[in-house]
Image 1 (spheres, rainbow, N blue to C red):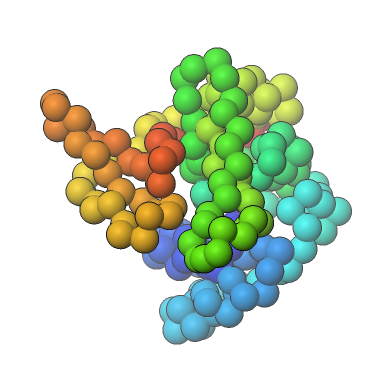
Image 2 (image 1 turned 45 degrees about the vertical axis):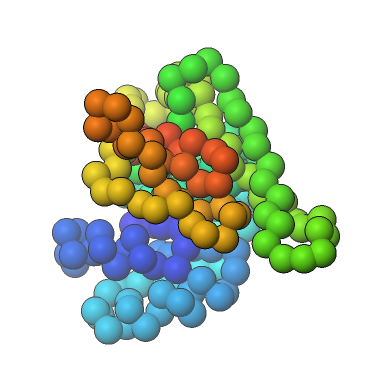
Length: 198
């Protein structure tokens, strides 16, 4: 199995997928240091690999993993296509994605500049993109996927708005009781997607 980040997802999913060998992948070592104590404590068979997200097939070889997970990653890239293509290339059975998607036929590409200190210096921006699900679906099918299944994430708890005035997750409750999730001024339409490879 392959996953991005410091290992939190591996830590939880490994309790269901026992006796699995894992690879945690990211571009920065500091995420590995966060996750390593939890992984070692649970004796999970895992190796961390630092590398370029856009060169996964060079790093691991094509069709190297049965399953791959990309959790909360694609919406924070300038575009998802090149990175997703690499994930599809290294996977034989299933790819699981969580990111921000819409049923509208638009990609909303947002750059966030977090002003969390004074004076008002221009900070390094990062992305908070919401992608067109239909376009994403068709891209996957055109690049080796057999079918896709998805479910919208429904927040089941109330989260207060952060006092900092910058980005941070909170909810607003609709009149009928459903909750919408926000981070700063942006709506967060999370979607879970299972991509069955052909």
